[in-house]
Image (cartoon, rainbow, N blue to C red):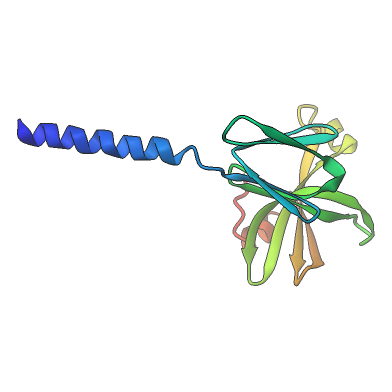
Length: 155
């Protein structure tokens, strides 16, 4: 009987620790030279709100943002390179992995031509590889062997 009470007490203690650990600030937003840390982020069309643990929030213009982290996913402002190695614009890309000094980012690209083949999917993923802070390689989602070499699972 004493063993079961001790086991139940330990289990309740462990669940309590897990519940309090979930309230940590795990989101951040970098805009210019300022770094905001909070518990949640809502990205809007022109502004992004970062919410703090006490319920207050700060609103930041999207064109001022350079990076943000939202519940384990990191997004950074990176240049979008077209097939001719021209820089089209800057966009938020999701950081995927790092392997042998190369950083791999994923860009979700709206593609009207791709929509003709798959009407349920207007977007396709393009992966950009940067080495030493410079553009190194562009990988389309159809290039499965190149993605596997970076350890990216291909479905």
